[in-house]
Image (cartoon, rainbow, N blue to C red; front, side, top):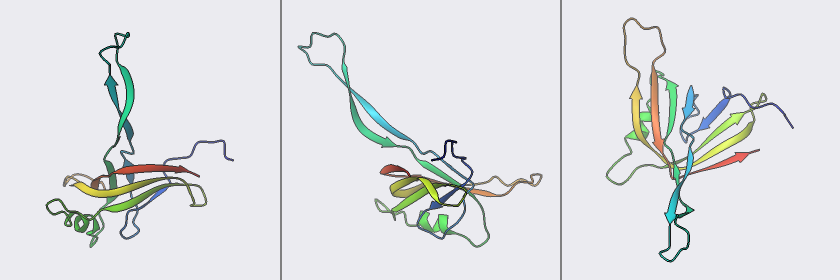
Length: 143
């Protein structure tokens, strides 16, 4: 068993499209809402706290723009009134042998926002596109 923490720079994303590389993944958040309750006959003058609904943050995927690759936008175009193509996405942190050692399995994801880099004549940066997705669940597997 490895005693050192895993580096964050070696990862892959299986997002249901062509296997592409991403520069950055952010927003892997899990949260539980807190419900406060106090019965009227309680001798305590404070509320008790209970776990409520689970909440999952939006996930942001960033990658360099590649000529002729419109997969983000094609997925975006599946959005219609109350309908969208939902995908299960797996984000894996990899070891030095390119094997997954920790995975986040994202359930029923769909796009909610696309952002492209600002264009600047004086910049010397790579053009990026950013896809923000919403989901209905995240499970974590630490192998």
